[in-house]
Amino acid sequence: MAVGFLLAPDARNHLEAYFLLFLAAAGISLRAARILTPSSRAFVLGCAALLRATLLLRAPDLSDDVWRYLWDGRIASKGISPYAFAPDDPRVSAFAPRIHGRLGHRDVRSVYPPAAQAAFRVFGAGGSLLVWKTFVSAADVGVVALLAGAGGPAAGYAAALYAFHPLPVTETAGQGHLDSVGVGLLLACLAHLHHRRQALAGVSFALSALTKYISLAAAIPLIRRGRCKFLAAAGLAAAALWLSASRPGVSPFGGMDQYATRWDFNSPLYSSAVGLMDTLQIPERAKEAFLGLKNGWGHPGWMQAVFPYFYSAFFARALLGLVLASLLIGIGVRVRRDDRAVFASLAALLILAPTLYPWYLLWVLPFAAKLRDSAFLYLSFSIPLSYALLYPLPGVSSGLILAAEYLPFAALLLIPLLRPSAPPPLPSEEAG
Image (tube, rainbow, N blue to C red; front, side):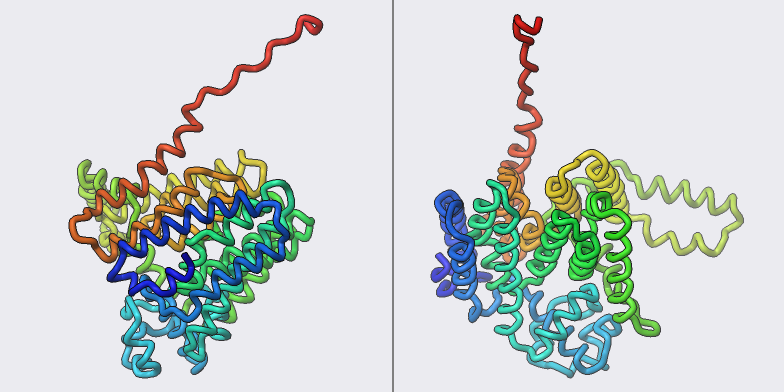
């Protein structure tokens, strides 16, 4: 199957072939996990490395993110902050014409945090796809090593499944996505906590969060476990990275405001929330109430800045954000086992976020593999269908794609909740 991915035609224009290969590889990965669970760590790591090596020379064809990585690295190597200018800005647009023409969202400044920018500067400044993809593939093999080294009966299964799973193989070695680096650092954080190395755990968490902000969702259970030493180390490491990436008038948040308010993709919950706001006319009613307050308070100047936010998409994001905050607090307080709490926190973020690209599932896949969570394992196998939302197939509606992705997933989530719990055992006659 890996050779098939390598030799297949451009996936963007031949999605049907890509889906068939992915489905076959998914079945193989499940079988491999069952067979190779008792295998040596070195053998599983060798398989993981070999599978990823097959795709290193193939050009990315489903995502253009990797070109933004190389662009940011090239701009930084010239002493210019990637957060200062969008690629289409005339002051930088001519610096790397070969890369510039492949970029998406050229009107948006970089959204990648400082640790990611450091990786772009080291491994991407030369503009070599092979160097960058080798780096993220090595990080992905590191994820397999961390899963295998976690110990316990689930470690071998999780490592083998992740090693053979087509999602990390195609999204890291194939498309060159950065997420394997952040995921590896998050798993390293958990490993350090397990061995009571709170300071190292804090540094690992800060690096993970500043590779991609996704891991911030797991902050509450990690701080609960690591306590003051963890929090201090994470705070110091994050502050050092943030300050090193900051320059006068340039914030490392870059274009995050546009990402947070504009981006949406493959999220049925977000679409439903927007529809609810439209149906109930929540923004219009809120605006009327706000105007009443504004008139009553004498038209203070600060209230004028609020007007651009009275639209359904913003209210939907605010609603989902409140639900997410409640869930993260509840998970952090009630779920005592670290890996389950981190998994649940990341899962809540991904499901409630307005944007869910296939490679975002890499953040929960190691935990789903270890815990054998059927719902998220199914989603990790079905999420590539969402590429048909980006590159439509003739006769295939977006509703059909979302149904194939999420209806079985929702059923698998609900089945354990609906299953009646076993009654407590009756006391024995001797005890009674």
